[in-house]
Length: 336
Length: 160
Image (cartoon, rainbow over all chains, first blue to last red; front, side, top):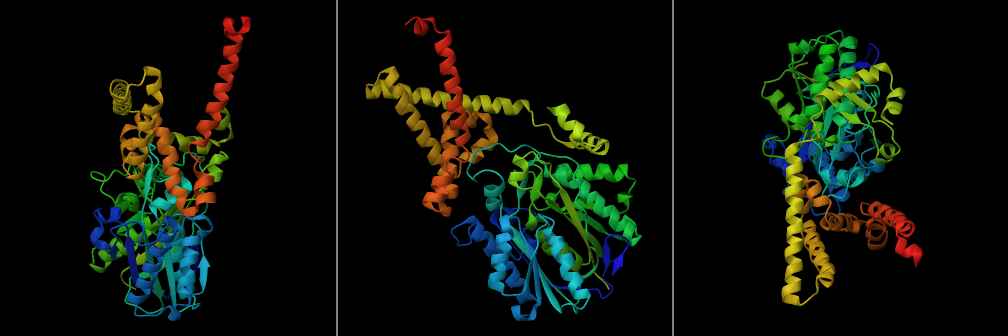
């Protein structure tokens, strides 16, 4: 259970019973296209607004994950989820369709691992047989809410990130053939005074480093324990800053491979995404799609996924507030 | 302003911001300037051609040809916006597409398209000036200030 200051060790090893990922057309042009269950050819999914489309992505991924597990909605006890929209409407409205008892979460883009950590905690403690963790984001709905109208011609700076369109869902259960969720570290909110909403990588990097260091400290392990450590959506700028911070704090990250989901999903050469990807769906689809596939193929045995979130709103930015960052880490292992 | 802001930051934060700044790719690039100059110039050239056509084919005077020329440029911008092309050109061209009247038309049209789904009155009607509104507000304020200055410093008006 509680280990160290802010980590949970799951001694019953809850299993990721099944996962499902669904993405938009732009993600389908990226290098990880084959790892996603469904690649849509358009952004609307037959809906008449971006917000409704985002909800449709989430519903589809959640239903598919439950189906892959060979279960029905009635056999899942709790649904943990969130998204980036105001009042997390996409998630809550999808929960209306799913009818599973629901706990809505907001951790910005860190919600993917926040929900998985809680889903695993509840299963581990015997609070549920099966739980669902699901998150989504939609490029156009995020642009509309946080930035400008989607068709507005503004030039993005090189530090800007492209929000992933898609949804990722995982069913966590007491029994299963793995991969298993072995521990989680809940991060604190870290704010280093970055105010540029087009440079969220720099705002989130200190939080990611803080959580990763806390994870090693609490579990008394070294980076070499993991085959791969990934951060959620720091992208190029934030990733380089995080590497600098690890070096400065003498964290021996060279023992392992450190990467970032925001740098994996798009092709920098052909897709014009500035620093890289972001969004709740970024770490969700890369982890549930690409990384778990690699674990199943035996390429990876132990991974640590550290989803990062920038807890800003358009209002806080206009009122000259800086951008607080947060990160939650979940450790996934192939064998018990 | 910058020093005032910096004062609020703790030494750790300041140290981090210096570190983060080193990793931030520069926003300034000479090729961006060239692109903005090129595209802005092309739009102006296009405007000039349209104006000449109005004068030579439509029989307008130079003064009369101004308004329909702006109208045509706005129309082109709105069509490109609704086809989803304008924002892609703008990412490449930067200020080149933002400064001419086409940028203003794009700001209005993109907001109209985006908020149409939230309803005609409260959605489109309420949010159409979301991006262009500040331009109008401060454009009017600036025009007022210039008008006052004109009255004060123009001897003909004061004398008259």
